[in-house]
Length: 96
Image 1 (tube, helix red, strand yellow):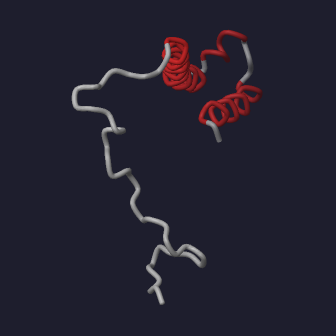
Image 2 (image 1 turned 180 degrees about the vertical axis):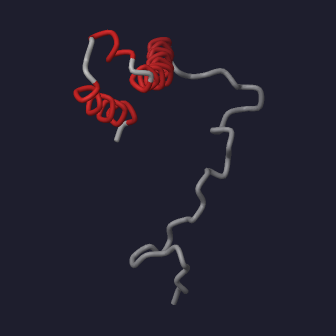
């Protein structure tokens, strides 16, 4: 009878505990390093990277503008009405 390991579950008798494949080269010959993605996939990867870069820059910038009360000064909002805008605006931008 097989001895259970700390990582095994009921019914998991012959599954490997290895995370990565044994051959880290994806079965390619040495020196074959070029990407196999087609041009449309590369374009979409770059588009997504640009979108993420925009989010990484815009979210903190908008949080800073709320913290510095720029919308309050721009739209002449009183302090009592601006407090929840600032509170919930920063929470929304933070993703909470």
